[in-house]
Image (tube, rainbow, N blue to C red; front, side, top):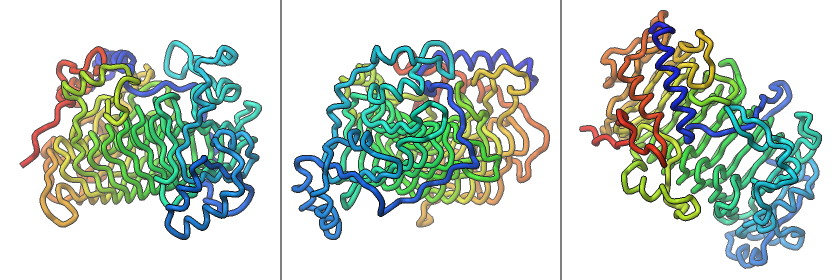
Length: 516
């Protein structure tokens, strides 16, 4: 497709992305951390610590199985704080904050309003357009205006963590359910770590944010381990402009956008991974894994099922550094039965109510997605989809779409055809359950035809659109996108839950029939 011919349509998609509001999320301008400095932090069992407990913690502890009961009882006399934020405020670098069993609602933080007039001078233009959003100094000066618990690590706003670095916040129960951090939709974020290098979050359950249950921003080195994140209005775990990160042993469900969002991860140039997701499970969300500008992420040995779509990476939304998306690797995952349809007329009517009037356990989508999709790349390069088991996704097992640079605010001619190139689908098991029984995808592979060096091999007998796919290394010349595929993408991005819940020309928002 010639750039000139594409530009009018590309401008249309850009306008729709900006108008849709629900696509993407607004961030302050950010930069990636220094890749030469950070590392994934280890889980520590010693060193300075602060113990946090609730009035009923002892009764809860006595119901724990040994040895968790003995360990928690030994910590109980050392409890000095009732609220997690108070412990964070008291913590020096390298402190472990140990949470005894209980429900943490952080009442002092809830009482702090947003906006705070004192901090309004620290609003800044967002990375993606007009208006203002809180800048870093806003969060530094008024940490609990938007956040129930805030770990803010750069005390002088020079871009380097010097305070509240290497904190470990850990539940001391036998399982994540023993410590519950409850946002009750009162704050945008339940837990926010901002320039908080070395943060470790471990062994608790977090729920009911008004946007992100866990949000880590401009941070060099983080680890999430054995955390359950559920019923966020949008994201279960969101990381942005980060490096040296690890998501592991996580469960996330009931989130209105993505369970795991490693967006704008640092560039690794296909030589290293900036964020790893492993041994985790996402179900009952709109998206299992999602990431605009999800560069150099490695997602492996995990399970994504019962979502609207299992895994989606893209180059769609403006304001995300590191675009276009590239160099992700997805391997040895189970991606199956992602046929959740939250776009029914009944759900549309319910979700039109104000958020605080809805049951937070009823999923209301905040993003338009093709119901019945296993893995979707919306404009990405040099991604590897290898050795996954992908089955029972009623629309597509995997799909690959072109997205022009106009959609992310890049009007340069060379950006209009800079995706999708060099994506490789190798050695996947398509349409078969682990026990060998058939569970067909609607189509195992879909490709809109755009891009060069895309290839498919050793995936067994498959169904696809087009019927014949290029084997590796793929063709050197870039082909054009099929007009009908691009037209539907443009139509679907026009979705808006309040003003346009059923965009004309979009079939994505209807669950397809089960394949025979």
